Amino acid sequence: MGNRVTALTQMESACVTIHEALKTVIDSQTHYRLREAQDRARAEDLSTRVSCWSVGEVIALLVVSFSQVLLLKAFFTEKRTSPQALHS
Image (cartoon, rainbow, N blue to C red; front, side, top):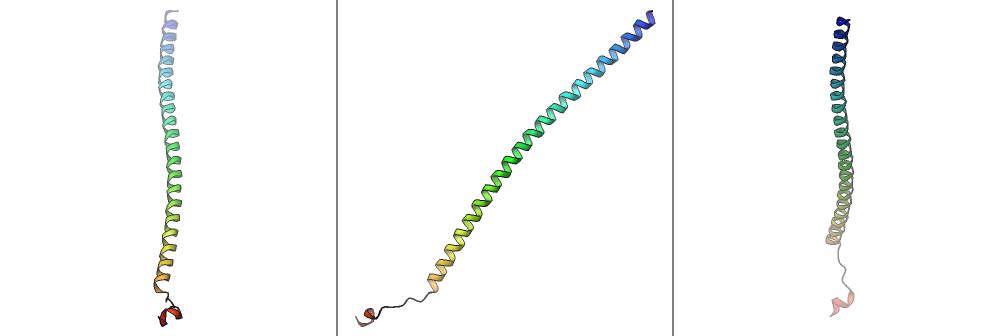
C-alpha cells in the first residue's frame, strides 16, 4: 500500500503542477485577448477620425478650387464700360 500512496501523491502533485501551468496559460490568453480588443477599438476609432479628416480635406479642396476658378474667371473677364461713362 505504501507504493500506491506515493504514486498517487506523485500523480496528484503532477496534476496540481499541470493545473497551475494551465491557469497561467489561461491568464495569459485573457490578457492578450483584452489587449487585442483594446487595440481593435483604438484602430476603429482612428479609422473613423481619419475618414472624417479626409472628408473635411476634400470639402476644403473643393471650396478652394471653386474659389480659384471664380477668381481667375473674374480676373480675365473683360469689364464693359457703360456709354454714359464715356461721354462724361
